[in-house]
Amino acid sequence: MQGFSFKGTINCQLKLINTTKKNNIKALGLWAFSHKDGSIYAEPGLFVINPEQKIQIMGTGNTASCRPDLHVLLDGIKGIQSRALPLMGTIE
Image (cartoon, rainbow, N blue to C red; front, side, top):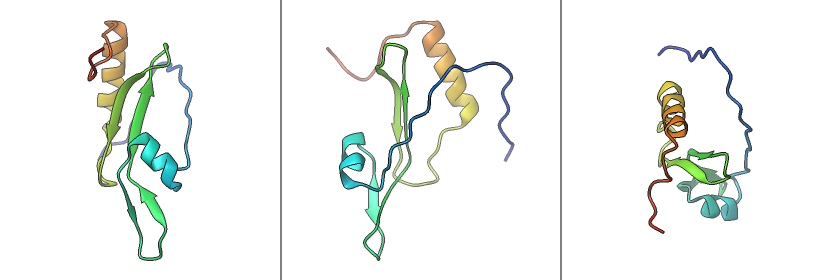
């Protein structure tokens, strides 16, 4: 597996949410399971918020091994934003 490298500037903010709380897991629509000791674990989720503060990209997985390739993700974000594509997945 190759490491990730990027030359350029990305203007972004990262916000992490405590996904060990049941209400956060449910609100984000994440997959979760409980350990034998009763602790709760949320599987990975990715939410990209566009400059208009709307969800542009959303992905959730039901296993820890389901994570996006960062090169593909960055290319997708650039393509969506440079072409001003509309939000997809909902009908208003």
